[in-house]
Image 1 (cartoon, rainbow, N blue to C red):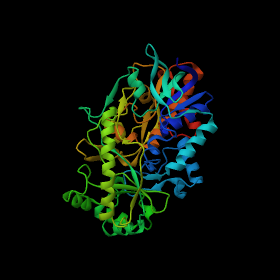
Image 2 (spheres, helix red, strand yellow):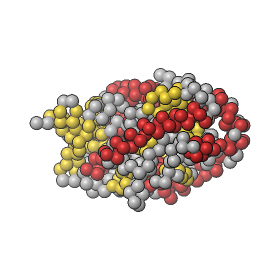
Image 3 (cartoon, rainbow, N blue to C red):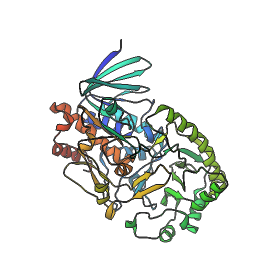
Image 4 (cartoon, helix red, strand yellow):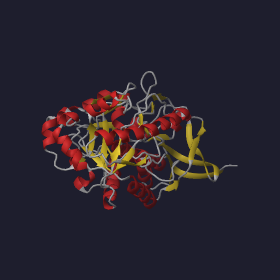
Length: 463
């Protein structure tokens, strides 16, 4: 017989939204359990070797993500896992975001762990969540399995931080997946290259700015040549995207996969090491186990081919070698809940804000189409948009909130809100709302948003 435990709040999924949600709930004086399939915290940011957080600022340079997420960055700086410059947030001349925050995965694992433990969060790692415990339409807990066997964990409120809306879907809540045909964005497998000479690469950027995306958002108001001329150190261009002609030449020789028109890499706090985001697996359903297996196999093959491309075609990478590859696939898009409110593409592009917002977003609306084409749309006038509380509350099921990319949103809106800084801010709201539900004995859809916003402001969040 399965053993049974009880907590006020259970958070499923210890990606960064789940970590922040669990900490926020615990700091609001409720008992919290955080569970994950990995033996460490961080999800895509650590297991996926993501390499950076996007983005803590709008294009005007105003910080729109603070609170617990900034606390995490500050502690990473103290332990050498983030650059101390600009409080961790390096200016990003690429122009898809004002700032990029390089983060070392190993340091982040420790920081997230310590933050949870000191906040009083109970951890249950190396644990798979089988599904929800239901009483009618109410989610009253979860079923998990690990080395101790199957266990039932009851909760007053559950936060679905799975990234795939697994619990909401299993509980019967309505969800959407991908475009109108159910096709999702490409999946990537991140990896790191060592032995890189970034000074040589920067010199090439300054010589051939036409080969790179610089100042992409029209709000920047500068040409690629003007931006390149102002780069004096490789940290000045922390998130690199380009080498268009080189990719085209390599593809013509069969030396690069067909799913990308450019390569992307980001700098790290480790000298001579970069994180590469240039693999692309198309046509795989991220909620299908067989598809994920095939995507992983294809990804490992692509890693070697992309590494070869860098050594042959990219200045400064002649001696580069694969240091490691991610333990988890980089899934950009999965299920989205149908919530009490919907974050629309129009609202994002217009920089719309309301009195029901519990977080802000500003990243470019970034969608990798099924064809492999990458489409970016930008928030008007360098502004940010608000994320309404109802986007976290699924229709038809009770006592459950969502933290992370699976919040209620239109597809292009999701292409923006899915990035780490934004979903961490959402996590802080979800955890705080869960604690309010417990304290007041009310379901998530009855939370007083005004009270939630005030509490978030008191915790340093930007709403």
